[in-house]
Length: 355
Ligand code: NAP
Image (tube, rainbow, N blue to C red; front, side, top):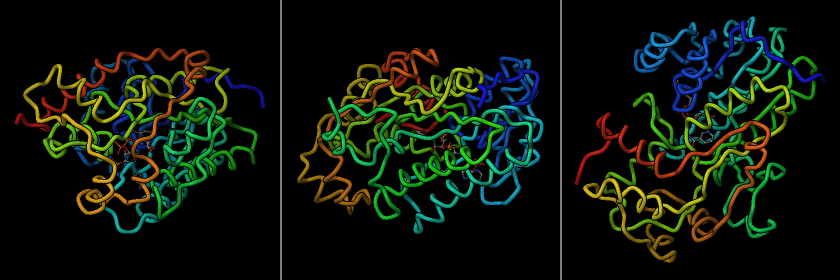
């Protein structure tokens, strides 16, 4: 397939536009003067769209809102019509608080992806789709790094260990990405680029997101983890870099395939230590709990399975992010800046209190 050059005078569709990551994508597109077809579940719900309307007011671009639920067949037809570029971010990012992982995660992720891509097929105008995937579709559990050269995950890795019973969010992401590649290969109008970020952090344009990113930061700063944290490591990446990468991937004809996006991999305690330097008045954790203790208490205290702890606590890994830098031109900012600005925003929005 010829690599597409996207016409910037055509609207760009962003699904899940109300979300943590997508709000920044919409804002940047509007700042570039583009027309954005933004889908949200309910375009009349102020808490979903107020921050998007505010961004539109301050920027030269045009915002058009569309209501669309991932599991309603054909719901994205109107939003995708006339677009050459579609950025599909909508998918639930929750890891607790649900009973049925299929209904809560897998169905909206996989059927939603099929639904959006079938709208792209019907539209005829679409030339490129950028899908928000995740490192969760690269690997399932941290222990898998032990089988990788230098304990480094790359874009050629695929998560084969997650299921509806073990790491269902990760399972929803890998199944959705696989579905997207399958649908992409069955047609020749549009190409597919996936953005596979690690844990996204950094200031949010909305306080009304359910993103687990916010929960991780809130758990650190709220005092919930004051007695200690497990040695769990995460790749962290700034939400603004992730948003910019979606747009770079959308308009760069040379972008193809998967792109891991990640800054440094750090432990929860290292995150807390960075934050303590700027926010000593918040009850951040000061120590790590031994794995045997975490195994004992976490299933009851945090609803985390022993299998998760066995395969994730105490393991180190890293990501090869060279493709994101050399092809997309992503420049990763300092983690301290990202974490502190995120904390500042949460304090300003009343999401965190001093001890
Ligand atoms: P978020 O703020 O919770 O955004 C998720 C979005 O999905 C929301 O806008 C939500 O729309 C939409 N959504 C959920 N269920 C839907 C449904 N049934 N129909 C229509 N829309 C639905 O979370 P986020 O962190 O920005 O996540 C955005 C994407 O990035 C997801 O695909 C996630 O898997 C991926 N990702 C996130 C991270 C991270 O660390 N945050 C890392 C890697 C990948 P409403 O507001 O209208 O409900």
